[in-house]
Length: 143
Image (cartoon, rainbow, N blue to C red; front, side, top):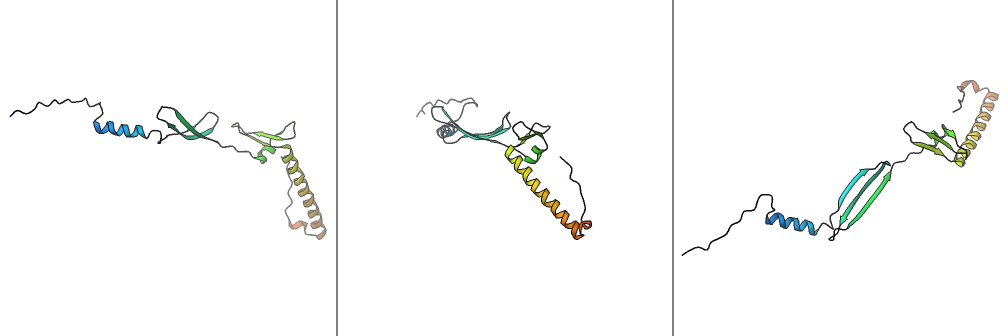
């Protein structure tokens, strides 16, 4: 009895096997569920993290969170230059800017003046009580 003739075809190694093709189909089916993640820093010093989903028609749904680190030291701002509106501004050598509003600067000056007045009164009372020599006398230097 003769056996039926079987035709065998060998595929080149670059072509996917049946199992690989099936796996690719499964991933393609879930592509709209599994996002593509990203994380980078842009030219404005913002950090971007997020994900992109691609639906079955190839349309993208892009989600991104932008974060930026900002430091503003009012103490450093007071070491800078007064501005025409009454605020103060200091620019660091690396370009970072520190500001304090006119209202906050005025409040700081009023509070500092009240503390200085109270301190002077305390020193006068210490002198009268004869206890002034027990404390170290320091001079304040203008900023």
